[in-house]
Image (cartoon, rainbow, N blue to C red; front, side, top):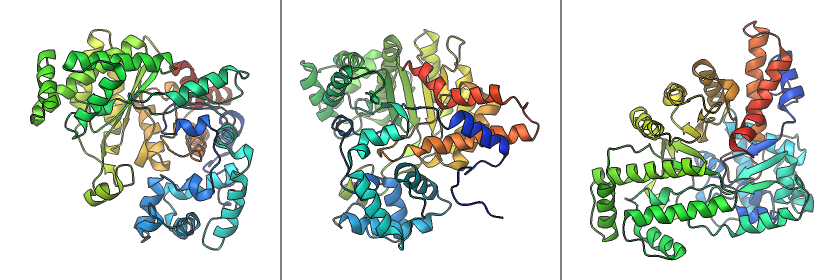
Length: 472
């Protein structure tokens, strides 16, 4: 007899898995240590206008599926009404079966709105009206949505040029309220625009940075000084995490003088070679790594996305609109060299590395073991399945590979990497998959039936490890 779709034991194949999930994993709080949530929306506790506003605005996962289903761009990023866009999503979603969007979307309808009906064109109007009515109420403001998922802490992704005004105002508000009554929001430092020197906007970024720090950035040492000032500012406002979204790690041999020469050439609008760009990127990335160690921060590297493949779409719609894919850079040597150079002089801070190409799974799982020095449990982490890999197969492969080549017990667990306040059931998705893997091993006799110990390990992976690792 077929199981009911998305019932309470969804993804749990054994009785032991059910016990592990319901008694140990389900009610653990959530630390979402990397996402792209807008800080101003959290500060102002906004209510979304309707379900489309909450669910489809900025969601390039859904836009990509809609385009593949033959839906015109006007219903994705264009000027069609919100309800017309939702109708096209409802038309698309039955065709997403076996894509993670099908599971995620229905989990979100259940967890946030208590809607267990399957979304399709026949049910779309009633679901849209029900969710939209709820989203208008105070308890469905964005803070309420986070609390509904038991989220305790979120780390947004922030430009070094950012004033952090929304974080600062939010922290002031939290200081007037009982501890734990509101979600903690912290900034994360993402300085990639000051690494990618080939970007045609690089000089304008430097000019903006000069305006913020109050002095002209004329050479490489000025840039280092300016970035350190911005990092100190982030640290003073709760920042303890950095993040990079790079194609690969840059680890060419360099000298400070070479980096300075390349930087000055760029400032003076002179062309630089690919090798010169690599020298500069390697130098500044190493400098940032040493700075993070000095600050006691955690550094994160999201590697391997081939971005903005569709040039027409990039020109008309801009980045982050659904035209990216998995890249195939060779990651091992440069990553080893980068981490090794920092570690050689005790300048390697806690580090999380995420790969987008599943061909690199074993590479990443073994690389982290080269630099775990015993000073901190799980100091160097291989991050959870990211972007195209944060689905059932991707999570299972990441968990199994880390288990076989590292210590799954020290893993800091899942994150959303999302722009959506409705994406937090992805933590539940991960937890169910994790419990199912352990449950199957117990019932197969591959692990002892010590549910208390394994249950505690699962709780650590879901929450406790991240709490300790990040110091939240």
